[in-house]
Length: 139
Image (cartoon, rainbow, N blue to C red; front, side, top):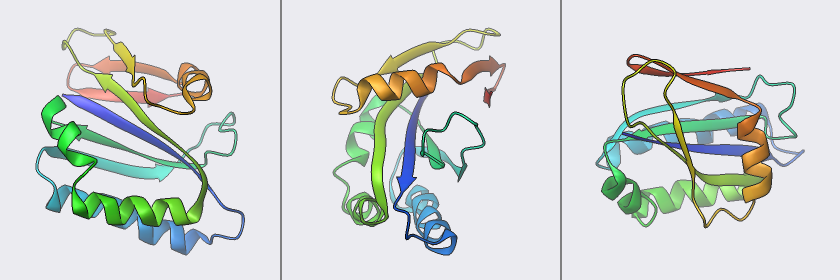
C-alpha cells in the first residue's frame, strides 16, 4: 500500500463551504479512479501547520495505480479546482507501508516535490506510527 499525502493552503478569500465542497470532490475520486482504496480529507489540527490548514490522504493499492492517478482526466478536473482555491499545495508526499510490525515506518518523499524542504519539515513534525492495520497520525 502507498499513502499519498497532500497539504493545502487555501487563499484568504476562500470560504469554508468552498473548501468543503472541493474536498468532497477529492473523496469522489475513489469512485472514478481504480486503485484508490481509501480517501480521508480534513482540517490540519496541528499548531505548526504553517498555513496548510487542510489536507487529504489517499491510500493506493500499489505504485502503478498511484502513477495512473495523476494523468487521469477526473483527477485533472479536481486538481484544477484545488489549484484555483489554494495559494500553495504540497503534493507528492508518499509513505510506503512495507510491514505490519508495530512502530515500523518507511518514509519516502517524491523527488519531484517542488516544496521538498518545507514538506519534509512539516511531515517531520508529525509523528507517524503503524498500529497493526492502520496508519495513525498524531501531533
